[in-house]
Amino acid sequence: MKRALLFSAAAMAAGLLTAAAVVGPELLSGYRFMDALDRYYAGYEANGGAWPQIQDSCALCHGVNGQPRDAQYAALAGQPAAYIETQLHAFAEGRRRSAQMGPLAANLSDTQIKSLADYFSRQRPETTEAPERDDALAKRGEAVVAARGCIACHGERLSGGPLGPRIAGQGEGYLSDQLKAFKHGQRQDPAQAMNAMASSLSDEELKATVHYLSGLAPTQPHSAH
Image 1: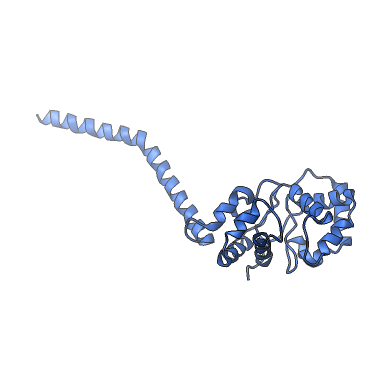
Image 2: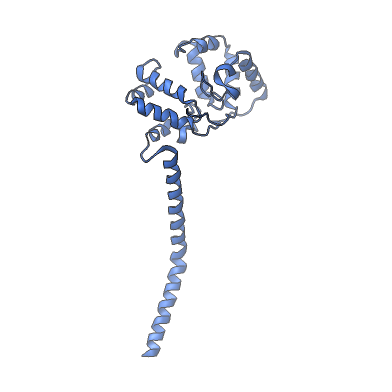
């Protein structure tokens, strides 16, 4: 009887060791996954508040944290808060037209607009989609930007200032669309400065400017306040 019990105990121990060998790595992987998930949500809530966050609805077009990977969409990460707030009000009031942004902005409260502006202004900006480098074209674009004094409104390294948004590192498609819209009066700058500047650009200068700006690495985000 004692021998049978010893054999049974030995068999049980062997079974547990076998189970541990098989299941153990899966349990360890599970623990690691849950730990990573906990750390992700801790960072998510520290950055933007409890889930769900209103800015999550912007990610489909503007990317996670406002940094898209599609060059057709505006990068919001690191934009001055005042600029984002002004543009959202312009969309909401129909002063800036967009079939997508108009209805979305119209449904936002002033508090929500301020919250979004504050959130995106704090995010780290990156280059959206750097084009294949053309040194001659980039050099011409840099000369156009310098000649037009773009830094006066768009800030140091064109990463956003009190009067203008970050244009460094924006996607080629987005920059091209906006400059053409200003040039042809489809988008209006209240001060008309952008309309006047864009209308003075030849097609080749516009192309060069867009190429230069889209490949320019933006600096760190501005303070939201």
